[in-house]
Image (tube, rainbow, N blue to C red):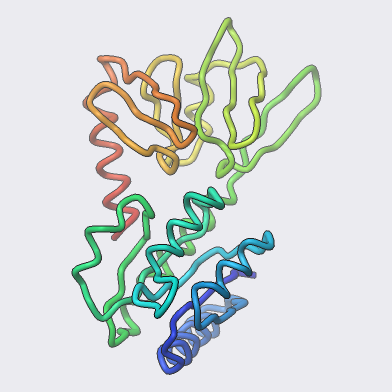
Amino acid sequence: MYRIGICDDEKGTCTELEDILYRYAKNRGLKFDINIWYTGEELCEYLRQNNTLDMLFLDIELISTDGIKVGNFIREELENMETDIIYISSNSSYAMNLFRIQPIDFLIKPLDEARIEEVMLRGIKQYTRKRQMFDYQIKGSFYKLHCKEILYFYSENKKIVIVTKADKIIFNGKIKEIAKRLPYNFIQIHQSFIVNMDYVEECTYEMVRMRDKAELNISQPYRKSVREQIMKYKWEKNN
């Protein structure tokens, strides 16, 4: 079940978008669970209660708590980078002010069904990738972890450390072998580091700053390829 939220104070827009999404699901044999809110406060309260969404269509120009504030609440206060946000507006000038929220698209009213279908195709592809698992072994026991939970890997004293949003996991392994088993949003930046590009907050030629504020060095042999891969990933994610 793919969980979708719509938050827009124009009821007509909500109804139109809901109809388009259910039609898309029916034509492709998918199951959508769609919830609608007409204010940002109602949506934030729903999310504050540990409810989650896979995708959120969010109007920027909400009357009280606007869509940018809601987006910042999701990314900063809830620390939720998993929900794909698609902004809706009648004004395209907002688009360049949304980098930190990392929306996957920006739709201009009136809504275009073909554009919405493009967004859904990309969103569902990302949803599938986020559900991919990484398996590892500790003292003869096997474990699995959602790749979306992993910020980065590093090697230390012949051990591999997985850094997640809540923990560190240590096991035996080699960085080069791990790199072969990860989805395309993970890249190697150093002989000792692999990072999840979804959690890169800042990237310079020499380092990346991760969501947990760790600053990781990009070694000289990797600098050109890392820059190219991050630019390519960000472009593909938003197209």
